[in-house]
Length: 167
Image 1 (tube, rainbow, N blue to C red):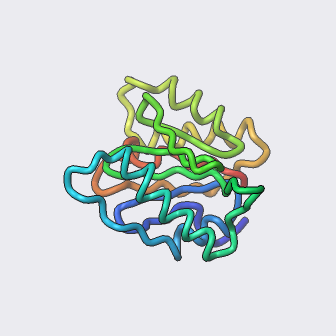
Image 2: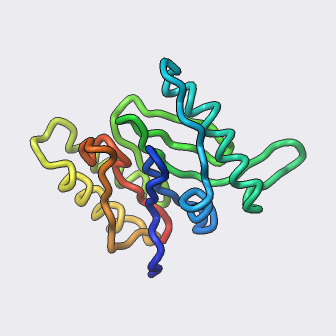
Image 3: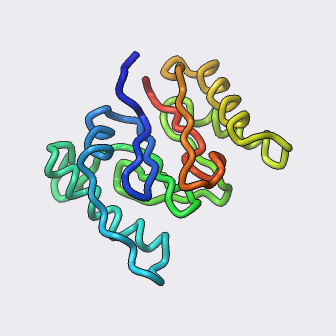
């Protein structure tokens, strides 16, 4: 067990990570992202300005890996503007058609649990606790204690749904 968190608030972003605690530390303590200009599409902003800031942060922090001309890093979730994005190790920005996501070793169990509770009258934190319990039950890399965060007054369901990661 570690005392440092796997979820960080960075300005208007809520970031949960897997892959590496060093990556998470850089995201949580060193990432600076320019504000999104009014009228700019949120997804386009995430794919450009946000990713450029992440790449610069990882390069400064010695975390970015290069193979030839191709850079790679790790996987993490970002809650922003009531939406959730998964940033993959090739800096791809993914947004699911559903309003939840997960990453890490318990991803599939957590997603399955979240899927079964879509439309069920249940508090978002209860949905998350069930998803985390499923991930812990079926993945040896997941265990509590878990921390659930809410993004800008949105329900936890609309923020970083759950950040199931290797512990």
